[in-house]
Image (tube, rainbow, N blue to C red; front, side, top):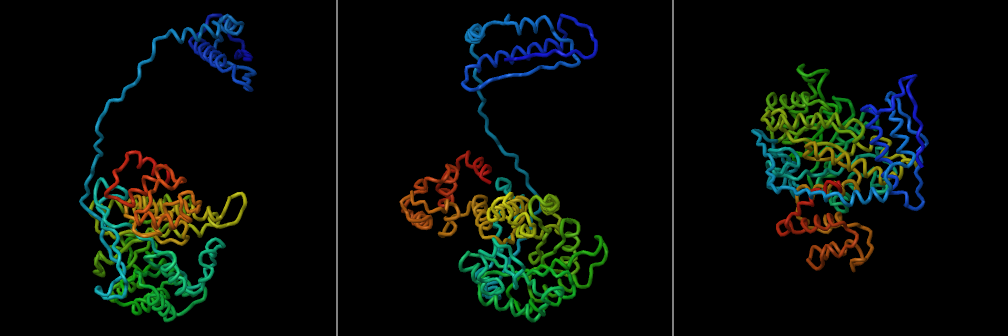
Length: 500
């Protein structure tokens, strides 16, 4: 039932002939009536409009009256009228070939090596290269992305007050950095370790530089992957003292060193603090890689890099930058803007912006929304993983060449994303498992997802045996198992975007 109440504005003339606006109203109501007549037979559905109020128009009283009194054509007549109408022509899309616009750039990011093998003067089982790209992230069609960004797994030298979610993963090794590093390498497959020397903070435990250096030596002896250190006490003098002791202890290992205390003074262009210059000199003397840290300040990063490259003559291959990183949704857009600037400047050839970027998505855990247990916010396990992995994804699309992460679930999700971006051939069980549902449903005929992963690597089964994977997931895993032998489906890219 349609009820109409006509409301005039003030005491305007009661003209019976519809104005232009009145005609539009008539058409609208007529169309509404036709629509309701067509659907009135749907069971359990009633349509009722209490009133239609018209303000500021001259209502078509006579025509509306006829419409609502039943003078309009019957529903059957309307259907017949539609049936008699000539069929609409089908739209035919004209075939064309899309040629993506390709832009070349005069510059590229520097290539930096972290870690050193025996042949390179160290004791690491392997070294890793980062950077070297001459195009923006993901733009494989435009240039070269030679090195997949590695993920450094974070180790603390004392308990920093981990959340319950993280303690479930590391609770048995918290407080023992050597055991923690071994677990990351042996159990979780870490290929890079970053050691956070939190205990050296003068406002906290205040361990000595010598104790920090011994901890680093013990970790180097326990694992054979590339290692870095980070200090963030806020005390420049103490950080330099610790850096010098650690640089001596790790001589030849080409560790990467970051201090969040050794930053610019108040503004760009003034003389840097002596401690910053000492940091550069120490790293250069012992052959380590420095990280210029200046949060959300592209020009500040350039100033630090220029001082290191020109003032202290540190090779470009020994410098990285850290633009600062925060949890996605908590100001990360400010860092993204900084990274966009760095990326653009590097690709046009400005050397001061060309050191590759390292970012820390693990900072997502500094926000209570990531870990705080509150029913209204849902599972803190899922929430923590989602926050850190989303933060990592936003860092990668902004040009990060290396990530520092904490939660193993988030790390696996990020590695799976990197697999798809870099089309990395899967050659071990762990890397195959991250693309399977991991619920051990046994519908594939194997007792566990791990058993199926092993069979896939041996070529003893097909990906399609997994009934719980989406078509996009199946195509993706097949290609990652055999990058050269599987033709790319154009729909695959669209599905990847949906998944991400």
